[in-house]
Amino acid sequence: MRRMVTPALPAAEAPLAAIDMGSNSFRLEIARVARGRYERIDYIKETVRLGGGLDANGQLGEEAAERGLTTLRRFATRLQGFAPAQVRAVATQTLREAKNRDAFLLRAQAALGFSVEVISGREEARLIYAGVARLQPSERTRLVIDIGGRSTEMILGRGDEPIRAESFAVGSVSLSMRHFSSGQLTSQAFREAQVAAGAELEEALQPFAASHWQEALGSSGTAGAVSQLLIAMGHADGAITPDRLRALIERCIAAGHVDKLELPGLKGDRKPVIAGGLALLYTFAAQFGIERLLPAKGALRQGVIVELHERLAAQRLGDGTASRGDRRDATVRDIQRRFDADTAQAARVRTVALALYRDLAPDDDEGARELGWAADLHEIGLAISHHDHHRHSAYLVGHLDAPAFSQTEQRQIAAIVLGQRGGLRKLETALSDKRFARQVLALRVAVIKCHARGAVDARALHLRADGRDRARLSFSSEWAAAHPRTLYLLEQEVEAWSKSGAYGLTLRASPEDWT
Image 1 (spheres, helix red, strand yellow):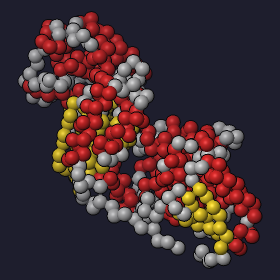
Image 2: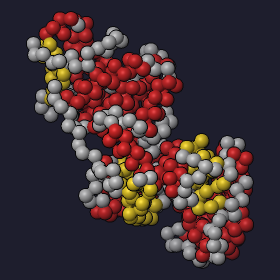
Image 3: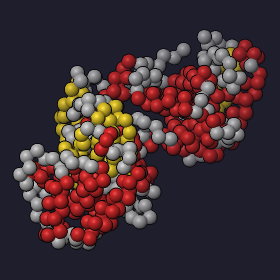
């Protein structure tokens, strides 16, 4: 049997990089996590205003897109020499909303040289809390607020664990564009902005009420900028209080227009969105009883690095595909429990699918991890209906809140799950990606082999690449004679791939001993 070759992982103390593609700014953080300590090596922030380029139809405009791509090219220069395993780039609310996000993501990945993932609002909130918990540890119950350009995250947590995490589609950029687009700073505009923000946040009033937490922290972006303003104005602690927010809003109204606004420490890139940020902060203070909001040390980018470090550590403990300790594994187990999945069958399919995939792509650990999770979850749709359960499974995988998974990962795994049975025309475009075609092929053959839902020999079948876009499925003559029904289904599988034209499959019975 061919031995699997696992590419070398970065050293345990190698530098890691996180790119936070926010709605207002893009940030690059390079850091090292060693012996429990977080050590920043470099930090670059560029104002991009990606969120300002989103039109009323949800299309990201070319001017904003090019600003983002230019910044990513600069980041790529700094990241020369970094391996893919050392870098994780995440995109947030603007690309969650953008209808043409896939086209932009292809360009972004080409500019950066690394893959880019879109994460859900709740996943963003969870990672924000991970960053705060690592850089500012505490056993007190805390409310963490992160006001970004087009979304605001609220997290209730204690120690390292978030208790509740939510994301709301309102931020400093979107609120400023809606209520201060002309640059006029009036009391009426501030009142309207606060009402709009309050309406968006109203459902959070009970779960995040002051009775549930002991201290409040403001992470990154708006909270950090306002805290720096207050320090420049003589408030050495930088604490954000209702009185201080009122004083800042009054100075804005007195100025009358953004262009005339003069506040000590207010940077030029922050000036166009400061009014929306102040309105949001004051809404939080008034509605959630926050008497004192302190700036937090951690943010999304630190959370990304901390979790990337944990993932790599988990892979070093495993065999390159098991990823023991990876938070995504815990999420998959939770989903299996939630939908009462047949875990024994899922384990059989996983084992066979991974053995087949290793035959085709022995070095592709990331592809194998995706395939393993798809196998784990391929039958959860049975909780809805036996008919077309693969479609139900794919929908659930693609749309569930799945902590530690990005939306990009969920969509990829959902597509593999969708391909587990039935015709292949539904995946016609995606199958042009040879990795994806091989993942789908391995899962389909594994499902066929395990169709009797009993014990199986994972090495009875072997896949071999037969050119770039063909594979050969081999088995012993004895196995074929003992499993005529499975052989019949495999012959039907050959026909399905032949009709698709995307990838070729042939069968070959051989007397060779595969054990």
